[in-house]
Image (cartoon, rainbow over all chains, first blue to last red; front, side, top):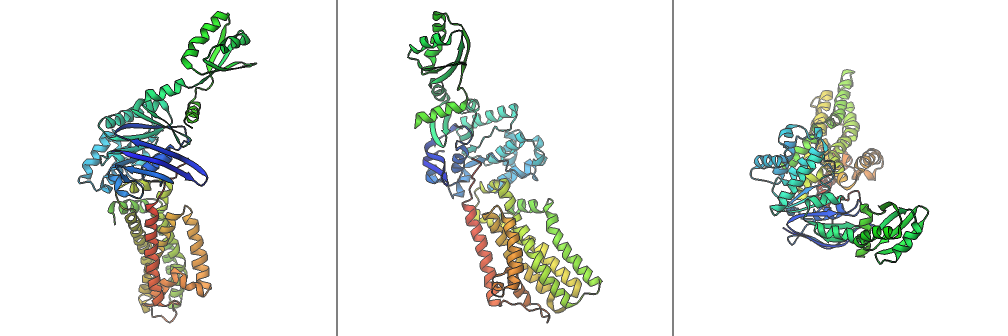
Length: 304
Length: 238
């Protein structure tokens, strides 16, 4: 199954949450990556039929998703908010999902879904007694109970302990391999890398990049890097570095040097050689902008 | 009606502390009736006053509010409604089911206690018990619909509902002559009046206006609630 977004925008008053996004989510696992506030949830809600696009269209195999409750035969949704009735047991919660789908054998489907997420043992306890990870798994079970072709998960790994996280990652990967169309959102690159074959990057509501994790990694390493350097003779080092093309700009301050490296690999090789040739001792070399936010802001500047 | 939706809704309302809220007012009504009857106030005038002022005037709008908003507003607040709405069930059907649950709760927690309270005071005299029970039932159903709608359209349903129940229904509805025509409890009293033959009671709105008004308000409110659920949006925290 295929979710297609065509020039989708969403704004709230003057605030643009999603800006002209066009993408196709096909079979396999797609990670929707972006910093907090990038519009990931907004985009996911539009794919799930819980938000109308202000502009553009969202379709599932050609059928509009908005105001169309029939799409839920094919969509399983795991929302980010808890959204689980605390007074039901895990079993009752998943069974109610099976019944709401009108499945021919709801008990069997619920049993299978709970087994998939390894929640058979605590299934007769009330959901309010569950840990966050257990609630998350029971939500996944409820979303899977009708064996949907499409699974949408909003920040599914939040609040899970490492073991539960690995288990859910395995589960998502295996469902992706089985040909289901899976999209999950996350603000953690490593998480997305480990699970998704395909990554869509969203920054400030805009579709900043798209590709497999190697493409995204490359984009992120090939961008200009900012290094902070302290050495025995900053001025001498600065003069030597600026002669090479790979250093785009050098700023000299009391704390040391800031070098804008335009070509990461070349600069990485250049720096130690220049230091040795000039007889300058390097005290500290540290990336000044290695955090994800600056990676994202680079991507968004590049795309605009 | 969707039985799964109804089942979850009943459990949410009856299985927890909220049931105390539903029980409090009916118990107060019956306690008042017992008190009047014990201290010798068991006459028709007292019965009609208690019915008009407390049963229909206070208990009914508040119960309608608790039941009408209670069947949906908490679920919208905490996001559990997504569980029901991300299923291949039409949203208007969800609204009608929620309404049916709210209406049944009003019947049990308002109409039945109203009958009991009136019966404690005057038995079956002049149709007071049956009449007011019927009036409470039909008005309660309309309240359930209106407050369900309120619970769908605004997050401040309870506040607005209380202001509506107290200011419009209790104050304006009973004091301003023209506004009485547009008061759900006055319509309920008109229906009650069809059964009650006591000389102490007379409704002020005609049946020809009250019945269509009750039907129109109820159906329109649930219909609109269904329409609003169709475009229910998750705006998220972003």
